[in-house]
Length: 386
Figure (spheres, rainbow, N blue to C red):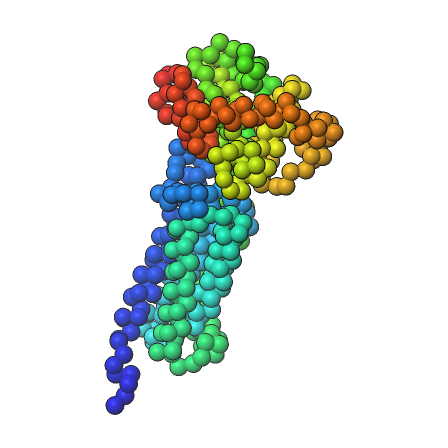
């Protein structure tokens, strides 16, 4: 008795592969939309921003979410469109059930290897995982397995020989294959040139264009001299949301310079400075805050503040000489500031104040004695601006 008579018909293998590809395509479309909103929507938070270690937004905020000047999710969309075309060709009568599976196997193998690389980066560099990314990884491995299994079940050649046969098959059906390959080629080669680089957030205007000063308690402010609304921000220079919100508030102040005053306070989420943080996190943020305090003492706070947000966003190693050159301060002065007890006392006073207020994450804002963490309710700004 032939053992193959007990195997399931072709459709029972084909349909799961089709579902897997559609799942992967839907996932990367969501990831691209989420990536865009993380950088452009001030109040956006993805559904999988669950904790510090499970957070799609943290992954989107990392430089590893961009590949060849285009979001990784964009390349994922092109890849799944290609995989979908392969599967539809395999399921068509012309494919004869045996064709296109070796090609899908090798393509899925490349995608699976790249998935392992991204998983490694998430583990050791970003130190946070994206649930939707993990789903995409599983889809890639599922395609790899099914392509191998279906080729073994219905194919008439090995994976390498079958690959060459698939290429000749596409060549034979070039009229249907050419449009797909041309579209994919055009998008992949031109994408870096036309895709909007929204992840380079628009910087605020130079601070010298706005009134600025120091509060009675010695904290730097910028904006209205006689404000309708005073916003006291507690931020971390290595915090993405802090930078995004600060840029947003500064642009509002540029438009309404006579209504809002922004007062800056430091709350670095650096375990070496902040007792609330019990494990390494935002290492170096405390030193950047000390540099900012030194700049305030030299009357250059807001220029240096803008640079430190940019530097913290790049997550580069802190080089005193590079900072000094960029913000027109003396290298020796910055080095001394990082050891100055008075600067430490000012920083720890901000941190202590933040802890007493109940701050558990950055950014945090104090408005009329009320604490708001993460973002400012839109109605507060709307009432003032209207």
